[in-house]
Image (cartoon, rainbow, N blue to C red; front, side, top):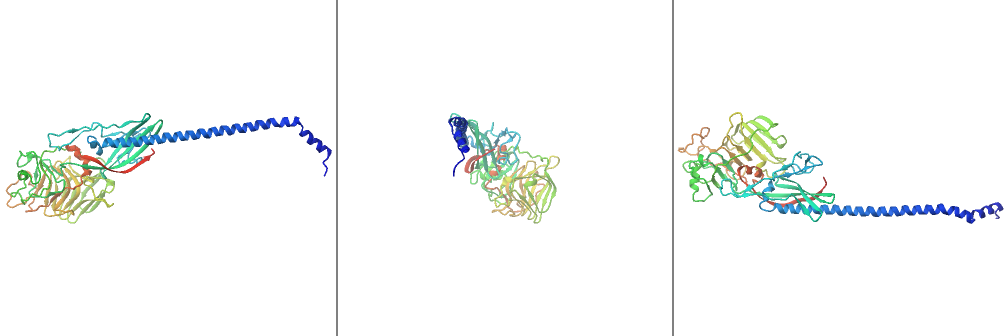
Length: 481
C-alpha cells in the first residue's frame, strides 16, 4: 500500500528538530514536577514516621513513669508510720472535670465524684496503744505525693480511696514525660487488725450477771466510776489473778447470777469518750412503726424508725449486698419471742458487722433502751446508744451462730444491763433495775464477730488506730481519663 505524498510531507515536518525542541520542554518540566512531588511525599512520610516513633517513645516513657510512681507510692505505704493511712482517703479534683478523680466507690467516672478535694491524710496522726493506755505513742505519717523519676519524668498520686465494705483500696497515679501523661489504676486488698478492740462498750456501767460475751474481740470496756469497785482502772484477761475482782466490779459473781466466767476477752476499766454523730440526717426514709416482717435495702438508706417492736416470728431483713444501711431509732426498740433483726446479703458473701449501723437517739424526747427478750436476736449489726442501755433479758439462744446469744455484733451503749439472774437477788442496782425482768440462771448474751474490719472508720473516734497492711494486688491497669 502506498502513502499519499501529502501525508509523508506532514510526517517529515513533525519529525524535524524544530518541532522536537518545542515538545521536550513541557515534558521535562512535567517530569521534574512529578519528581519534586515524589520527593516531598517521601520526606513527609519519613517525618510522620519519626513523629509517630517519638510520640510512642514519649507515651511509653510516661507510662513507665506512672508505673514507677505506683511502685514508689506502694513502697511508702508499707512503712509502719504510713500504714495508718491505708484506711483513709485522698482524692484530688481533676481540673478538666471540676470533680474528684475516683469518688467514694473508687471507680473512675461512676458519677459519685465530689466537687472538693478529699484529704484525710494531711495532718492525721494515730496511736499504737489502746484508748486507756497513758503511755501511748503518737504515729505521724510521712509520705510524698509526687516525685521525679529520671531527669524529665514526674509522677503524682491523684487519688486513694478505701472501701471498708470489701476491704479494698484503689489508687490512681499520673506519670508525665515531656507533655504526655499516662495514668495507672490499681486495686489492692487491705487487712486491718485492731488490738483490744472494744466489742462491747458500756460508757457508764456494766451489770453482766453471768451473761455470755464471746468471740475473738469480746472485750468489755466500762467506766470504773459506775462499777462496784472504782479502783480497778486497768484490764484483766481471762485467767489473770485479778479476774475475780473485775468480775465483781461488773456485777458478775455467784451473788449476781451463774458463777462461771463467760466473758472470753478482757474486762477493761476505762471510760471511753465517744465522738460519733447521732443526729438524724435530712432526707431519711421515714418508717413510723416497724412491727412485722419486712426487708430493707441500701437503696433507701438511711431509715428513720420511730417504733421498732418485733415479736412472735417477725423477721426484719436488712439487705446490705449493695452497701451500708444506716437505721435511726428514736422512740422504742424491743424484740420479743423469736423475733429477729438480721443483716443479710444476696450475693453469697458473709454480711459484715459494719454494714448495718443502728443509732438509737431521740434529740427531742426520751431515748429508748435496746431491749432483747426471750429467744430474740439482733444478727450482725453495730448498735450505738450513747444515751440509754442495752438490756439483755433473753431466756435462751436466739441467734443462728454458734454459742448462746441474743445479740451478734458490736454494742457501744450507755450501760449493759442483764435481767435479774438469781433468786434471792441481793446486789440490786436501783438506778438500772427499773425496767428489768427476772430470768434466773440465763446466760444468753453477746457474740462479737471475729471480722471487725468494716468498723475501722469508727474506731479512730475512741482513740484506737488499726494496724493495716496490704494483702494482694487485684488489678493493675493503664486507664484513660
